[in-house]
Amino acid sequence: MRYLFFLCLFIFSFSLKISAQTSHAQESWWDYLNQNRYSEKWGSWLDVQLKLIDGYTHDKNAGEYTAGGSYFANDHFKYTAAFTYVDAYPNASHLNHTAELRPWAMIQLNTSNHYSKWIQWLRVEDRFKENVQNKLATGSYDQSTRVRYYLLAQFPFNMKHKYEKGSLSFVTSEELYLNFGKNIVYNTFDQNRFFLGFYYYMNKTNILQLGYTNLYQKYNAPDKYLKSDVLRVSVFNTIDFRKKQPTKEHIQ
Image (cartoon, one colour):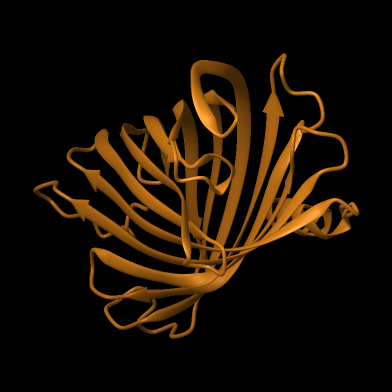
């Protein structure tokens, strides 16, 4: 069933019409994601992201900082609640910063077979975005809700040493965003992100991700879209502090 849904999302991402008012951007995203597990039931989530824009690296677009906790129902299914602070530059201006406050909750399912790993999550975010006037923050906030569905598939190249130090995997993912709220008029469909890339296992606890994201976003304005080419570099750090180490695959 998940394969069919993944295919439908892929087709959906390329079937959307691109308006004449579509703007284009070139970005790079630099991520550090730490997920720890302290007991059979409890863990933590830490995420730091820097987004650069204008020829991939010329200007800072935003910084995102997330901290939260996770509850493990079992080794495959967990709940996470966290808070993200977004520090953004309005309209590419460095005169002032604007903030977004984003508490969120998520359910995540990890599955695998002999040939692949799959990660799915459903996330609900409350977004409090600071209003901007004349490229300056006003101190007032608009509230909306955003729902995100994410699906990732990982296919190792070496089946004998799939997830060991030095191994390499092909990775693809799809993430669909939907907005809800009284101020959401034109962009119930918020954005779609389609990713192609690779995982390199640096060691048991660290994975390097390199890849490309095609981002297609609808602004909250009639016939106004953004299409962005994103180069992404990420480090996933996962540590299991339980005294008895499980034989299961890593907990990401």
